[in-house]
Image (cartoon, rainbow, N blue to C red; front, side, top):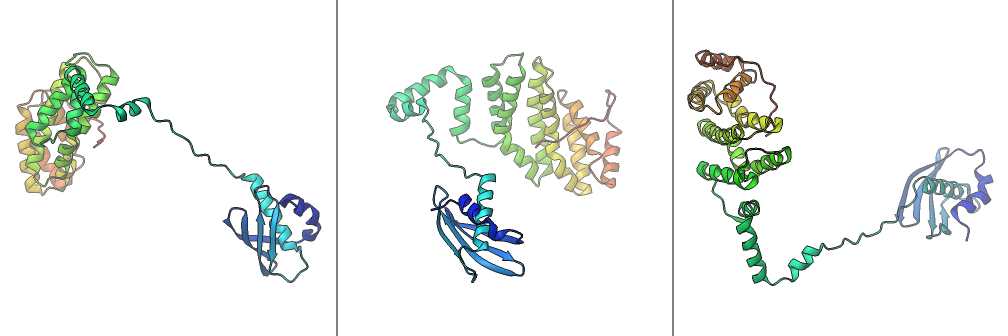
Amino acid sequence: MPTLTSFFSDHKHLIANKKLKVRELDEEAIGNFVSFVDEGKESFDVHVSVDDNHELIKLECDCENKKPCLHQVFLAKYISEKRQLYPEKIKRKSSKKTPEHHVLIDNLDEVKLREWLKDLMDNNKAVRFEFLLQFKENSFSAEAIEHRMLEAISSTTNNRKKLDQLQIKNLLNIFDKINKPIYDKIKESKDLRSSILLTIMVSKILNSHYNMIKSNSKKYEAYLDNVFHLLNTQFIEASSEVFSKSIEEFIQNVQRERSIKTRAFDYLYFLRDLVDTKKRLLLMSHLKFIEYSKPFTTPNYSASY
């Protein structure tokens, strides 16, 4: 049997100077093509089947012309050229090798594995912390969150005062993981007062740690700034009365906290540009009474939560 290419080559005179068009070509099964071939205003249903070597198995056309007809030849040409431009890719199933440690774990005695894990966690605070974070049923109270954050700092940094950029990145990733429930609670809570207190609590711990270490990490700085941005939506959506009372309470609480005072007041000036005119006037009336010793420069924050 001829191939698609040789079939077209032998009968190309049939389509010389003919204006034909292939429409709605469909490969119903591998090598089994169905299409409409238009000749002027007339359209014909054409079938072409080929095997794996592109040799013709079947040719059909519903026109009344002598076979092979120009419609079959034109479709054979079209399919042949299409396949040359877009050669069929053979999909090979990749056999993924099972990692050696997976094999060993699957075949180990459970008692031995438990004993080994206990010993590992007794001597590795980071692994122990990750294990507890993954499997312990955690409380989401403010006290529990504070305890877990301090554990994260201790297990990740071993309380070192000097951290490189990778250590800081790992630490911030853990903060995101352990604080996600409280971050979500701050953003979604209908109680703005509660959200403010939680935000201040988280910010105090993070800032206290940052002030202890020797680093000028911009990532850590941005992380600290963005903690206050968790309150953006609630401040924007609060009524004017709730907004005023909440700002007053926010100021009263952060004024007593040296580690976050400057960052917190910078946030309030940033918030000024997010709220409507009435709230902006209320906010400025509170801010003008603050004894704010450091000259203010508008920070360029970008919330990431």
